[in-house]
Image 1 (cartoon, rainbow, N blue to C red):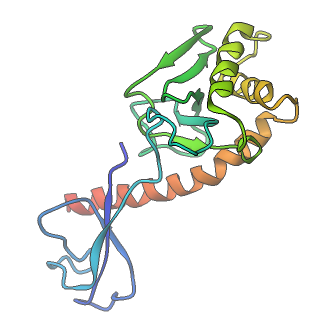
Image 2 (spheres, rainbow, N blue to C red):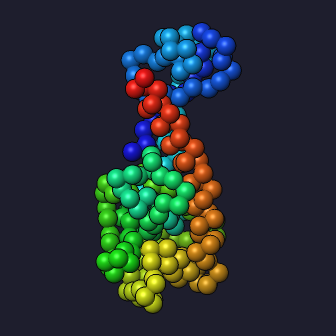
Length: 202
């Protein structure tokens, strides 16, 4: 699981211009020389670039939300690597995530826990969609069911988006491109957290 990191700079050695990242601790050490940190820049908390999908939509915000998580929940985003699989679903106005499992050939509706660390995408084309309309289209997408033997979670999300927008313009590629912009920052953050974990063990 991704955790908040503390970002700071030290002046105890020749690396005063380099940012350092650490997990919460009673004492923070310089990661270059190992001494108790003498701060050149005071620590401040940096939250992970993920969101809890199980939160109801904020008043005035776009209700159309698509959530992505690592398919392997044991790995999560902390040890996620390019080439690993993602799972996705649509989030209703109350924070319930609906997704499709091609392996089990069924839909899942989850209201807590599973999607607490998600990449949330809001398609810019959907900014004017009303919450009640979005919720109805999610249920319509479930009623329509899977289309073809290769139907997967991404196909389901794309179908709900196209139902909502009244078009076939939304594609797997377009949604993947939207998600990848955020995945880049998640991967960079997970790299920093893994480094912080290794430094804490030294």
